[in-house]
Amino acid sequence: MDLKDCTQDELARWLTARGHKSFRAQQVLKWVHQHRLTDVGQMSNIPLALCEELAQHFQLARLDCSRHTTAADGTEKYLFTLTDGRRIESVFIPSENRRTLCISSQVGCAMGCQFCATAQVRPVRDLTAGEIVSQVWEVQYRRPQHEAVANVVFMGMGEPLANYDQVVKAITILTAAWGYQLSPRRITVSTVGLVPQMQRLLHDTQVNLTISLSATTDAVRNALMPINRRYPLATVLEACRSLPVAPRNRMTFAYTLLDGLNDSPADAKRLVSLLHGIRAKVNLIPFNSFPGASFAPSSRERLVRFRQILLDRGIYASIRESRGQDVQAACGQLAAPLEQAT
Image 1: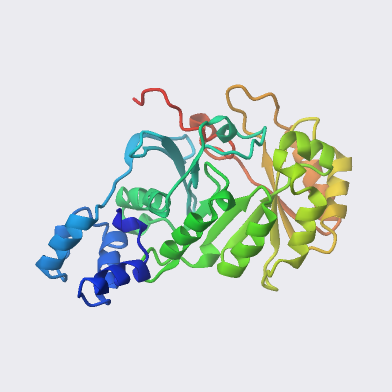
Image 2: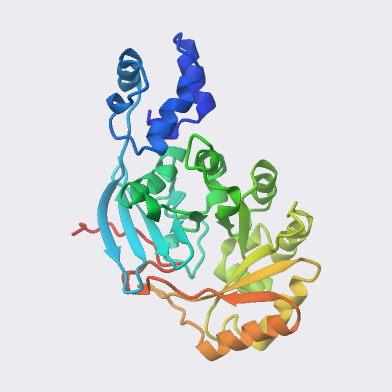
């Protein structure tokens, strides 16, 4: 078992069952996550006999970084190979005042969103909590301490809420004092709208939640996002009205604009109506093309006009500028190619 897959409580139970003090669990996990431990024998404040016992039962699994590319704008994409040979991608996005890592929660995605390259990756499998946090570990390991990851977004490959238990376990590790010590406010989980899991997530954690809409009618959303047949717009938005969001926060919605399909003034006005009664924030996302895509991005003029209609009607909206397009690292472009990495 990978030590990065353990919570403090799990490791403490393992230790006490073998006659060790439970407080050693926190010490060990601090070495793993905060000191970027690569060898169990390197823990200077842990008795040698315990180090040897841990080494017999646990491993410190590493993700194989098969490819690391840097875009012209400084965005970095990591292609990681897992122990079973499957591949995932993570994206580090630096800016003046924040350092964000976009991580994957699954290999591929079963949601089938037509404007996302990840939907083409088959077969789909869930990542373990250890594989999820290992993406943060590997990027941290390659960066100086003063450039450490400050924000984590579950917006890479996969639908996070379809892998609910492992994602919540990973969040526990990312926010723990013995883990990465990230504030829950610096973690965002994005979903296509799995209503029961949305409600559980905000009950079980204090992270931010972003819901992808990308259409203002069920007919269009059915075609773009098959999940809409199970959870149509009215169901998703009614759930959003009842979610326990802190008074100072807004409910965030993502809307990918596709030329001539969902970017008209009528769409913008319908979106305002749909969000009535919700303290909403809308992130407008230009479509990022990928091989085989059948859509075109909206023009800048249509993007700006769409946003202005929302603003004029009291909906806070921003255009999320694409990062890393030249290395296929932008939103919707992650597909972890299977060809031989170079």
